[in-house]
Amino acid sequence: MSKPALECPQLTLGVIPLTDSAPLVVAEAAGFFAAEGLDVALATVRSWAAMRDKLASGRIEGATLLAPMPLAAAFGLDPVATPILTVKALSQGGSGFCVTPELHARLLEHGATPHATPLEWAAAMRRLVEAGRGSRTAPTLAHVYPYSTHHYELRYWLASVGLHPELDLNLVTVPPPLMVQQLEAGRIDGAWVGSPWPALAAARGAATVLFDKRQFWNGGPEKVFAVAQPWAEAHPETLAALLRALIAAGRWLDDPANHAQAAHWLQATLMPDVSPELLARELKTLRFHAGLAGFPWRSHSRWLLEQMRRWKHLPASADVERAAASCRSDLYRSVARALGEPLPLSDEKPEGVHDLPYLVPGESGALQLPADRIMGGMSYEATGMA
Image 1 (cartoon, rainbow, N blue to C red):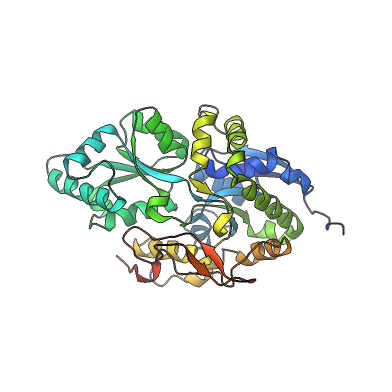
Image 2 (image 1 turned 135 degrees about the vertical axis):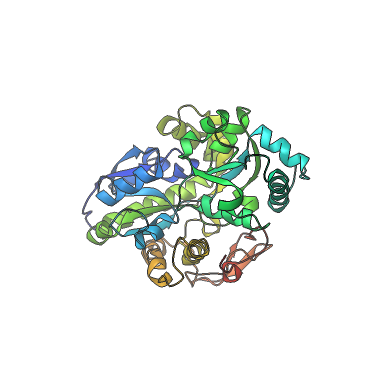
């Protein structure tokens, strides 16, 4: 049976220099896009604000985005008027928190051990901040964008020990590709940023990685593939082809035998100054398809929306249902189902409460997902507002 005609086979997709962009890079380099009749050009974008603007203005048709960005667009928090849809999760894992050697030494002086848990590092940060009140400048910690998983997870981490992100520390925004430079220059003391930048900072002696996303929230939201709503409505067959190609790329990336080749493509396409060996190691810290890593969970969106309300980025009266609807699990389902991919019965699940691998009901039987306990063991239902 022939496939339906594509409305727009020539596309430009935005990618940012991060390991999470691997599905788009692989889909182009390995021919998964071409196999779907798509002629895709990848546009490298170096900041999330620029990516947002290009997608909203139609200069690119799809993009790697931070999971909270479509939610922020739904409420007009970002200066764009175009609704943005999450149509696929790109990855799980692949970010981390690193600090300069100086801050690392100070945390050790305040009770942390070299192999501390995220909660133990947070407790040491609190002791350090309390000891320095009135006498030393508070640490400056960077994240990548105001509406990012990194920002809300950094706040969650600090608040878990009673630190207030605005009152007790200095939080700043730095685009991912500039994070290592800012650490080396001493302009920031720590960074919550996506792979490969924490590992590169460590390799260059600019930082020590305290923990990665798997230790903080294995299975939590990360990057997504997003399109503008008007474009999705006008190009349903093209969008379906994109999703098929990205599902194939994610499945391919989960095979460790392919990491060396993927690393070479990532270096050539996005990160010429990062070695293929480091990128290959970093690919092992992500899941792209296994364990429903590519499924766009609405419960991830709800958790992020709770954090946005917790920190007064959204009013308590905000219509969370309207924003959660920007996560179009239904569009992903229709494509994945036709491919015979396993799918959960529900678009939502309890988040962050499982110490061990667990089962969720699936359309064709139970599906096993990896352990997903959030540091501190608090699910979004119990998070509460600050």
